[in-house]
Image (cartoon, rainbow, N blue to C red; front, side):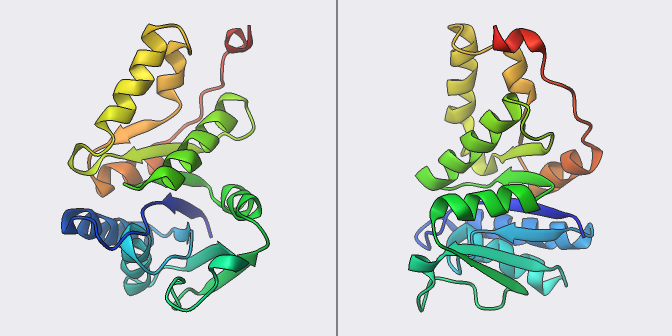
Length: 190
């Protein structure tokens, strides 16, 4: 089965609109025949996405490091849970097992995960779809940052084509379903 990796917040203190969108995202992933790979958290965007997928019959795979495998943190209804030694190993498993990535609203960890898979794609280490799920304009400032980096020549225009900014869970999954990889130009490396 193909799987979509969803990165997102583990905070329960966020606005309900983010939780609702995450739950809907999980359901759409399952309805479209994909499994979910995520950071195994029970709370926040992570937990809402897992519940949405699980409640629609989707396979849910959680990946977390051993120091987070304590009461109250993992989503206990995962179909498969993988416990790793380190955060680095966790990310590697999520990256290699996923067929596509969606960065839902989240904090510093989510930003780091998004930028890592984006960098790996730029360096031709994978050819997978990447989506920033821009619920309620959450990622507007990240998009501004990326466009500013292009404008000031810190990166090149094609960088903006390596991922897609979408406003709804439906658009995110539709993009993944229709995704066709375009090779990174050699001139990026000079």
